[in-house]
Amino acid sequence: MNEYTPERWQFSLFHEASHFLLHPVGSYLEAIGAFDDIMERQANIAATEAKMPQHWVRKLGPEYKWNPGLMAKRFDVSIQAMRIRLKELGLPVLY
Ligand SMILES: [Zn+2]
Image 1: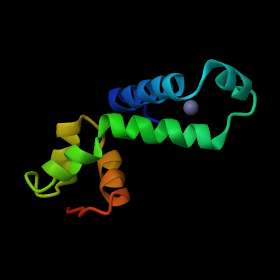
Image 2 (image 1 turned 120 degrees about the vertical axis):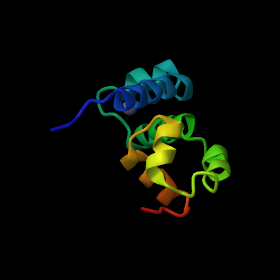
Image 3 (image 1 turned 135 degrees about the vertical axis):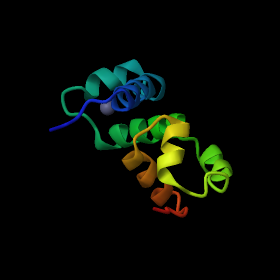
């Protein structure tokens, strides 16, 4: 079951807003039929950066002792999303 939490909903909103900002209307509409994987990844990257900016994750990590549970609360995301973000940035993931 795909749980649709407020965090998930907010990520989807950022994802769609990223499409709007990154992809000109023409190419967006053209792509609706066979949506481009690259456009999807771009929107996911932009949404992730909006929710968990790399600069702030790196800066606040030591303060939160790299605890993904506490950091997830700070960034208002799921613990799973926080763990993935820490791993993809090559940062410590404790607990
Ligand atoms: Zn999309």
